[in-house]
Length: 434
Image 1 (cartoon, rainbow, N blue to C red):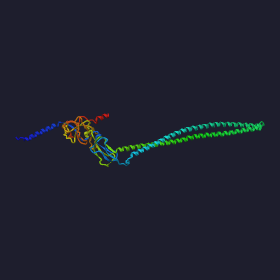
Image 2: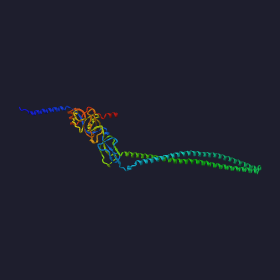
Image 3: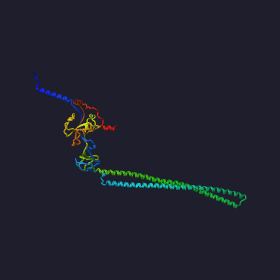
Image 4: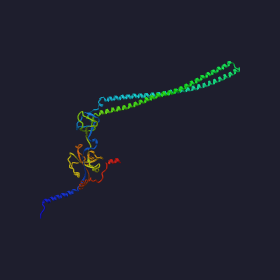
């Protein structure tokens, strides 16, 4: 006969209704996603903040801009002066130019010397040909004279033999009394004269032979003398050409040094590489020394192509592909985000995956970086006031599953499910590899 209190029945109905509602909610569709955090950056490396470095060591002499000031490409940001004693001379370029001119004059003189040696060698060779021709003619003349004198010698030898024979026959006839003493003496005189001529022609023949030998020796001597002179001139020419090549190499080094010094003087002014804003001066004051390659000031490009870099876990990277849609929540913009129901989210912006790194990011605890750009067809107009470096929270949208399945997956630590395997690389890379 006892009845339950009215408040208990009302509470039971409410709990039952809530339970039925929660049970029905479990069957609502839920869009799986991969959440990650990151920051705003620029898609192109040239549009990201860059540190302007000094190409040479120096000492700051003057600042021409202030932090936050807008500069155009080619504007001078600051000037420095050199700190190396090698470049202290204010007339350094003039002195280097004088050295170059002196070296050029030296090269010109060596070229003239080489030309003179070439002419000398040509003249010596011409003279050698003439002298050899003259000496050969002399040798030929001596040879012909030897032949002539040898013929005369043989003739006188025959005459001498004939005279001796005649004298001997005359002696026989005289002994028999057939010839007189006078005739005998005449024949004896003729024999003695023939003998004298024979001796004279023999001496002349031997003298002519000596002249032939002397002319042959002179021929060889002329060739040896001129070849020695020509060899010495060619040696001098080779030495001059070597000195000329060495001087030319030295001239190239001096011109290179002149160009380097001239370029170094232009480096005394640190200029803006592109249009942008001076963000931060890394070196301050006047007289502060900077090292070679040391950063001096940071410049932010004026109109960067904004993008978002997000860092995802390694197990989520295989689920992503270029072109995947992403919802973004920027720091400083109020938003109400329901990761599984993006249609009811407020204050979020759309984007698409543009780049997926192939290696993990060293400074992000083994995570992989992805770059997201605005999605023109899905709330792609990002706020104009976005600044590079602002924090971002992103949700890469995957497939729709029931809510109970998503809770079961998260409880068991399973990865999200996909209807098909994502591409291993961007389509344009595949096309290039083919």
